[in-house]
Structures are given as structure tokens and as C-alpha cells.
Amino acid sequence: MSLIEIRKRSLTCETIYHEGGPPVATPLRLAAACAVIRNPYAGRYEPDLMPFMAELRSLGTLLARELVDFLGKENVEVYSKAAIVGVDGELEHAAVWHEAGGWAMRAVLDEPKAIVPSAKAVAATGYRLMVPLHYIHACYVRSHYNSMEIGIQDAPRPKEILFALVMGTGGRVHSRLGGLTKEAVSVGDGQR
Image: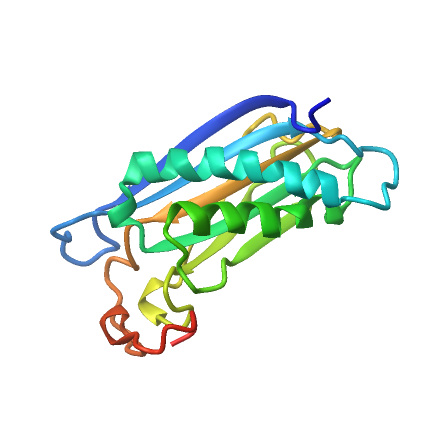
């Protein structure tokens, strides 16, 4: 029996043309793919979460492919992941997404090296979570530090988990604070 029972999914996109300065030639697109599933461990302590984490790779792949199909793989420059656990669960039920969601995004994006940032919470239905973003090839590219809000109005219910992956097509539209640029990334270690 599968540990993954999806109640609903969503795909959300923000298109940013400017942040008060001149409109940019190519708007920034940030997209979040979310899935709300039944929490198989709601209301009880489960000592072995590894089978759940392994099975979630398929959900991660589904969401990552949806984002890549939507944005175009060649356009993706930032990424992140998030999970919101309903109040009958625990934070560790969100932490399973670190490996499953991160692995899936790396696999569909041809193995970028930067760590995949994340956010997680145990919260009531309708909770919104700000998810940090950064450049997929080097986490110290300051122009690409950003965030996107995720959430679904009726989720997660107390015995559910909302899992999300976020990708975007670039850095902030009016970035001008210096630091390492994406063009100057040279080390290939995911940092610089």
C-alpha cells in the first residue's frame, strides 16, 4: 500500500515586471508546485520514517518535472523546497522532504551543486510559508537571494502534509548590491 495519497495539487506562478524601477526586458517568473497528501503518521510516533522519505522521491519527481515543464529547464536559475505539516503531525514529517524534494530537483535539473534551501513548519490549515530561494549552481550569488510564499487556503488539514517545490527564472529584477555574480561562479562546489 502506498504511503502517498494526494488530495490535491496546485501550481502557482508569479511574474515580476519591476519592483519600482524600470520594467525589465525579461520578467522574472517564480513558480511553486504543491501537493497535499494524507499524513500516514498523523497522531502517532513512527520511529522509522525512511520508507516514507524514499517513497516521496516519486512525488518530488512529479512536482519537479511539472515546474521544469512550466518554466523550461534551460530557464531555471533558483530553487527551494518547503513542507507544512498539519497539527496532528510533527516537524520530522516535514524533514523527510529535504532528501526527497532536493534529490528530485537535482535529478531533473542535471545535478546542480548548490544546496537546496528549505522551510518547514507544523501549522494550522491555511498557513502561508515564505520559502527562501537562491542560485542553483552557487549559493553565494547575492543577486539571486529571494523568497516566494507558498500555501493553499484549505491545507494542510490536521492529518495532512503540504509538500512544495519552488523554482524561478532568475535573480531579483533590480538586484544591484554587488557580490558574486552568476557569471563569475567558477569553483563548481555549489558555493562559489
